[in-house]
Each structure stands twice: as structure tokens, then as C-alpha cells.
Length: 301
View 1 (cartoon, rainbow, N blue to C red):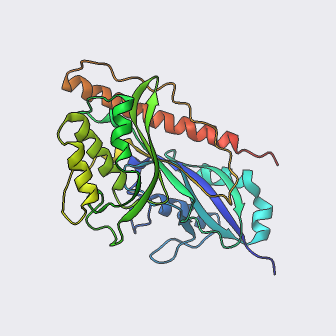
View 2: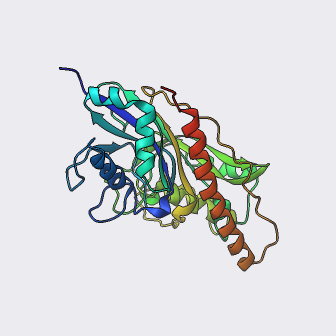
View 3: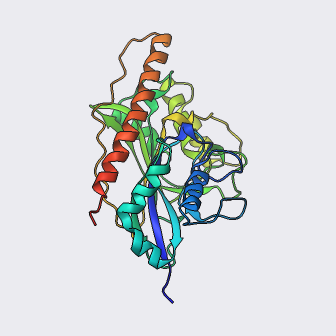
């Protein structure tokens, strides 16, 4: 008997259209939507509690956008041979809502575990926050350096997060577009619930002068002393990608050239209006980038 085919499905989605990624009964989620379509295509069981055809590499909260996540589906090999990469991508996308898309499929080796990539990368567009005052590249680099390395992020996660709150951040860097800092990038092996959004709010507080670097360091290096520095909204957070050395996807560099720069000297109400424009840009860019990734991984058969 042939071994079943283990398929890695690369997906992207707009977070505000789903109540998070993880399956929840009678609620629109990314996993639930994908599993329902797999069921309709006879590629999986009907989704319900504790019965799941798909496993996601990363969980995301409602509102968080995703450029790349991986879903794993097991199929009998004869079905995979008959369908192939191109038809599978097309079959999913023909049935998915416009805010969730499959941009690639490849076969993974036996025993592949999507939850354990070499690393994950997030980006947060700080300039989308209504009260973001701006930052120089040098300032941002200094603030981000605080979080690099292994630390206990108890003060930078959801209080209901698991008990093991130690995480290792491999690298951070300012997210720069047209010479202007628009946010930051952060890469680590794994992230705890709300970690990046709380780091983003701490940086916002530093930029506004609401806290000092010493206060942020104390919150990080003294996790036994509770300290709540707030949490930034999910709309500007993007799960940018992850690296699995077992998978072979083509990922062209993202084109952010149509992102507009935040005008200076706006009133608070005017800035709120600009933030709505920026949010529309993110939606447009996510869809455009999803198409670019899909075309880069298109295989003629």
C-alpha cells in the first residue's frame, strides 16, 4: 500500500474577516473555512470539535493579517497524483471567500510537523496607529534591541497564555519604506499569545515619551513584577512568513511601493482619516501580494 501524500498548503488571508485562525464551532475561522471546503471536495472529514483534516503552522488572532501560513492536509496518493498542484490551488480558490487564498501547494516529507519551522517573522506597521509620533531608524534600532535574545515575556503576553513564557527573539529591525520608518520586523522560533502586539505598544509608548527605556527593560528583565504596558490593535500586524527547510515555495520580495507616507502636521482627526486610507492600502497590498505569490508558484501541468 502506498504511503499517503502529506501536502503543505501555503495560504494568506485578511484577518479582520475571520474570528482568528483556529477552528471554533459555528464561527467563521480560517481553519474552519478551509476544512469545510476540503470536506466538500471529499478531501477531508466534516469539521467539528476534535475532528480536523487540516493542521495550521501558526495560530493568529482576529484582525491579524497573514502573508504566509502553512496548512497540512493528508490525502491518498492516487488522489494527489490525479489532482496535482495547479488543480488543487484552483479548486480551493474557486470556493474560498476573496479574503482567504491558497497561493501554493507542495508535498512534504513523511513526519513533517508544520508547528516547528526554523523561524517565524512578523511585521507591525506602527505608523497606522492614530497616535504614532514617528521615529528615526537609529531610535527604532535601539528600542528593538531590548527584545533580542532569550527572555521571559510574562509582561508582554496575554495573562491567560501558557505557563512557559520564555521565548527567543533571533532578530529585529526597523521596517523602512521610502526612507521612513513605518514599523518593525521581528523574527523568532515561536511567539506567545499577543507578544508582538504588546511589544508594538511598548515601542509606541517609548516613541511618545510615556515610558523610559529603563521601564521597558524592567518589564522584560523582571517578569516576576507585573507590569502592563498595553497592547496595540491587531489590524497593523502581519504574519509575514516562516521557514520550513523541508518545503520548496517561491517567495518573491514584497512590493510596498504603493504604500503612502504619513503626511506631517496632521490634526488628530486628519490622522484618523489617513489611518483609514492606510488600512485600505494594507488590504489592497495583501491581495496583490497574494496574487504575486500564487503566480510565482504556478506550475503548468
